[in-house]
Image 1 (cartoon, rainbow, N blue to C red):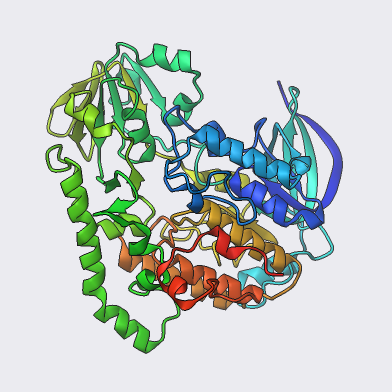
Image 2: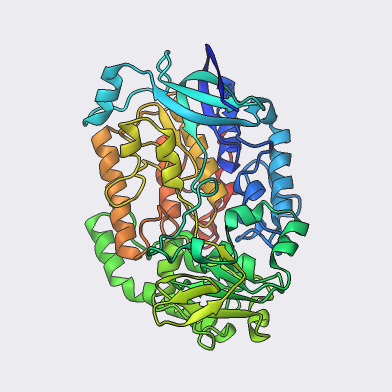
Length: 515
């Protein structure tokens, strides 16, 4: 049915697109402006609601995944909560802070247009001041499609916060040589995103008694293969380190990367010459810690037996936020022969399954593509030019100051596009920063200075990991938070004493509102 257009433009100061974790955090922090939140579906939760499988669990302990003012009921429970528990937690947060009243459900943003003055747009394109987030007049208009008739309503905002995330909506699909794509395959091909939308009965009917191939070896692929008891073959292009729990040789994992003292060993932006030299001299210790963790993983898990030991150091996966927690019975299923592994850089379809460069074949009735999502293309399809071309730099990275503000896009913020060991904590703190920026409690540096800071962070990621295209700050997350706190006028050191400051992990609880 064709969309129907309503001509009247509704105005609000702040608009938010998306009601996942980042969206509800932004709504809570910006509630002084009565924000309008557009959620394309009928529920909050984002990927936890719409891209989870029965087996999906959180990848971190509860205490590392909570809002600063809304602790988990059983925050010391060592088990990883299921996606259902996470959704219950998010709904509890939304009810506690009355966030739901701001959300327009089943309202999909389909187009954005720039309506600010040309001078504002031009000023953002050259070195100079970024300007105020709230200018007293509309800068962006958003077309929102809603209802069964798909009626399109335009809304105007001074500040637009984009929280649609990097995952979900737009699957990343592999390309194949001519006559070797899924059209020649006689079975069923489905992306993990579509599989996650099946109910239990439909998922069982799809896989039961079938030969299954799963493409990928990241979190979604491991979740699909591990707990279902359904025989499958995992096709792996790039190996990544996986961990069975947050304990290494009996020591808590946070000691290695999540304390101020452990992150002291790693590079970070804006180091003085002496600290840069010290960081270079401490590089053997960084390698030793990575080797220490690798030694435990190769002892604990049968990685060599199944050809799953990566060639790169563990720290490279941690520094790119690609470390995954294994389901409990993953390798026990592999030992039974229910999970097989095939390393391959290239593959394509034949009528009975998948073929590889070495001419070997895997028979399959169902091929599940756990090949990720194209979040950048999702953003680019929504933004108008020239902003769509600016959103990703020449290296394919979103250049965001504090992981939130694009220096060349006026009056727009992005939350949920920078990663760390706890994306919820990362998103919430940046929403607090954004709210204070909107209130003009502080000013942004010049566009030139912001671009310079982003460049420093990108350069550190390039030197730390070959997987640098993911904007991940996990090895210098505390320093990143320090700088955000300093800009907001908060103390950067948040602990009660220097021992805790040096050796205890930083969590959301450390960033409660300052009175």
